[in-house]
Structure formats: C-alpha cells, structure tokens
Amino acid sequence: MAATVHPVFFHITHFRSTRPKTPTLRYSRANSVRCFEGNSEARQVTVKNGNDSLDICRVLNGMWQTSGGWGRIDRDGAVEAMLRYADAGLSTFDMADHFVTPFPEQIQHQFGRDKNHKKHWRRLNAGQIRCVFTEDERRIVVKNGKDSLDICRVVNGMWQTSDGPAEDLYGIFINRVRRERPPEFMDKVRGLTKWVPPPVKMTSSYVRESIDVSRKRMDVASLDMLQFHWWDYSNSGYLDALKHLTDLKEEGKIKTVALTNFDTERLQIILENEIPVVSNQVQHSIVDMRPQQKMAELCLLTGVKLITYGTVMGGLLSEKFLNTNLAIPFAGPPLNTPSLQKYKRMVDAWGGWSLFQALLQTLKTVASKHGVSIPTVAVKYVLDQPSVAGSMVGVRLGLSEHTQDCNAVFSLVLDEEDVNSIQEVSKKGKDLLKVIGDCGDEYRRI
Image 1 (tube, rainbow, N blue to C red):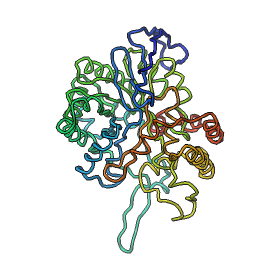
Image 2 (image 1 turned 60 degrees about the vertical axis):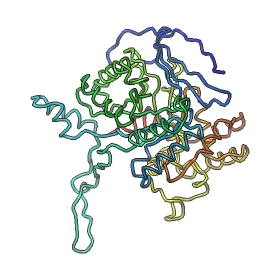
Image 3 (image 1 turned 90 degrees about the vertical axis):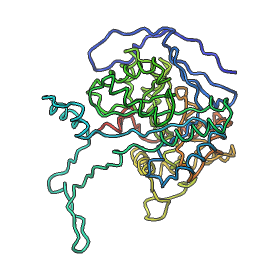
C-alpha cells in the first residue's frame, strides 16, 4: 500500500540568493511536491509536483555508459540487455545523450547577423575551461624519431560533440516491449532523458524543436521526464527554457520537468518562478555527501526529490578495488573508464586512497553481515537519505550486468550499527562542499 503524505503549505524563506530580491512565494496545495513509496520493499517511488507525477524504480539504469568510453556497445545486444533489466523489475532507464558544448557555428546560427553576437560570444567563453599555463608551459611537443607535433597541453576533448546512442536504443527497446510484452508491462517502463542546450537565446521554437528530437529518437509521444541542465548561471535564459518546457508539458509532449546538476540557489529561484520541477539529478555517494547539506535542506522544505548518480563512483565502491594500492603501477585494477578516472579524482579531493580503503573495509564488513555486495550497501545508504527518490547504477549493456546486486538493494535494511560505522569513516574525509562547492559546481568552475 502506498504511503499517504499530506500536502502542506510552506514558505521558501530560509534560502536567499545573491540576485535582486523578489517577493517570497507562498506554495499551496496545488504545487507542493510529494513523494510516495510504492510497496513494502520501496521498489517504486512517485515524484510529484501539483498535478505532475511519475512513478519510477528507485534504482535507475544509467545509460550514459553507452556513449563509447566504457567499451563498444552492440546495438542488438544492448536492447536484449535492456529487456532483461526490465524483466527483472529494473524498468527505469536514464539517458544523458545531450551533454554537448556550443560551437561557433551553432552560435552564429542562433544569433544570425546580430551585431552584438561578439558580445554574446565573449559571455559564452567566460564559463568555459581555458588553458592557463604560461607561454613556456602552455605547449608541448610529442615526438617519436622524426615525427613530432606541437600541441597545447590542455586539449579540447570533442567526444561531447556528438549525441550518444541511448535515446535511439530506448526507441528500439520500447518497440520491442510494445510487441513482445503484455500491455500492463508497458505501464512500468520509464524513460528519463536530458536536454543540455548551448547558452543561446531560448525561444519557444528552439526548445520545441530540441525536445521533438528526443521524442522522435525515443519513439514516444510524450517524454516521461525531461531533465534540464544549464552551463552558465550568469545567463538567466535557463528560466526561459524551463518556462517553454513547462508549456510543452501542458501540451502533453512532456509528462514531468526536472533538473540535473543545478545548485541550491538556482533551484530556489526556479521554484520561486513557479516552475513545477519534480526532481534534481546530482552527484551523490558516501564520499560525496554535498547534496545532504544545503540542497537536502531545501528539498525537505519544498518536497523536490533528488535522483543521484555516481553513487558507486563508477565502480570504485566495490570489492574490485578493496585492498589495492593504485600508487604502485599495475598493482591494482586499471582506471580504464571515464567514470573511474573522474571518481578517483573525487577520492583524492575527499581524503586520499588510504582513507578510501578504510571506507571499503567498513562497507565490506557491513556487506558480509547482510550477505550482499559493497555496491549494494553504497546504493542503499544513499537511498536511505530522506531527500533521495532514486539512485542510478550505470549499465554497460551487453558487456556486464548487475541485476542481482540492484535488486538486493530493495530488501537490504541497514541498522543503526551499520550506519554509524559508515558515518564514522565518511566524516574523516574533507567537506567537499568547501572544497568543490555546491551540487553541479564541479562542472562550472574554471
């Protein structure tokens, strides 16, 4: 039986932005955000804002790993794997195809012959990563025999210039579901996607055309959830984009509007503008507890829920890295995926490999006590945070599967002793809110 949560009236008064003051809004029953757990194992959860709601599985299948950096994905094998995940009850899929950066051609197309386009371009560059070496350090020559090339030591990685295949895979998958599964099975499947536009003028037609691309690729009339990301907060166009997305929701092209990698200040601004977002997807793990500070406080006040990624840190939070020493070349497992490399840097910022090993030892003790794996404990710990609706586990479709570990999350109950032992180690690390900043700041710092 679903838990009943009574809607409440509240003010957003505690959080103050640095922008000019606007009237504090009173939120009523119509747009309060609520979250309902579905069954005794809490497998399903409903994220809700006013009349907008969506049931999702609390462990989501993260499909960013289909982009190519995690191994070659065979299309047919990937779709078969998606069907196995759905058959196992893990029926919510999250896509991240559209994390692209703007290029001059795109910007010229948007601004046309606008005489101010250079001003716009300067503003766009302000938030981008720049090569900051001195002239002597800026460039390097890579050389072998007579072959040599002079390059900048900070290289612009253009893997982000092409959309990933996740939405296309979902389109094939959903048609297989329509043909090969009973109608009631279709009601359980969810496809959550993202839109990350370049910081250009957000017109209604531009937003509509962009969303139509995802609808076509996923072969759905209405997107279950559109999660929106914005690179440059100094450009308030994100509010225009979200208002247009809300209009598309009212037209039935989107069922729910959500955010990804927004910080607490901007989430408050968005809510004050009466944009009915139901969730914010952020990086969150036992190591990275930043969302449980400012963000969680606002979420508990407003009812907006968090969907988390990086919860098993690309696989670092697993038995594979227990009792390893990465300081010795070739002594430990290779950090051979973008996720492993990214989250190893997070470990370094938090407290280093020795402290991380102490955390893994603690998690292994808890896991052995309950007969589960380290990743299962890591996911459950984050899911138990009141502000968290769901956590993503990356799926390397057709290459490896984690359905057993994921399903074990729903029956695992961490007791007080477990939680205290994990917190004892976790709190020895640095406060990443002070080191990195709020949620999403890791992508916006120069």
